[in-house]
Amino acid sequence: MPELPEAETIVRDLRARLPGSTVARVRVKHPDILHTGLTPTVLDRRLRGRTFTGVARRGKNVVLELDAGLRIVINLGMTGRVVTSDAVRAGELRHIAVRIELSDGRAVLYDDARRFGDVDLRDEPGWAERDAQLGVEPLSDAFTAELLHALTRTSISPIRNWLLDQRRVAGVGNIYALEALFRAGVRPTRRARTLTRRETAALRDELRAVLQESIDARGTTISDYRDASGEPGNFDRRLRVYDRAGEPCTHCGTEIRRVVLSNRSAFYCRRCQK
Image (cartoon, rainbow, N blue to C red; front, side):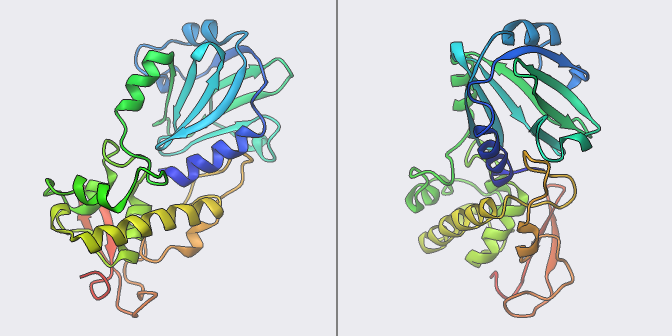
């Protein structure tokens, strides 16, 4: 599933291409990816003639900003992609669910092979409501070691599961949670409230570091993820524990282990992560 670095990479690419473009019309091939209550007719009617003013990210969501305070909020699900039709490899897309045609002849394409994504349209009050449901941005100044320690004090959830809760920290998924926990020397099965101040400080720093490194590498492509130019990310070459069960730890050589937490795999080194 695309996480914060993948969404941020797409946003940065679109930010150079979309602002100033005007919507001519919207075509929806697969209405099942529209947010509950949103119909193709309503989406087309409300977007026609609107101009893109910016592109932002909130958590794992790509947010396309338009005049009149409207926002198209796209959650990429498992296999979602957002590209413009003039992107390098846009012609390879085979599962276009939504096509936003622009007055300059281009189009914004939302492609989703498995259709687990979600396309929503929000006005100012609606966006404020949705924004409030998400936790702190891990790359923001607000995400301090003190805040992370305070937030974990009442939870008995495994720290890996805790990090995946978007109401607490927005944008972190399984890949980067596990990579950060490895770097911080914290086992993913530890109960969140048992982490010391030193451990939460290390986890905060390593989480920010691994997210930024992945952004610099244009995200992680395990199978389906592509950036806004249709190109894969490169951070998969730097993964130290994720999906490496049975392989030697890059630090100590101990075999990487796999454990299932809430029906999702977690990977760790039993020597480096006490």
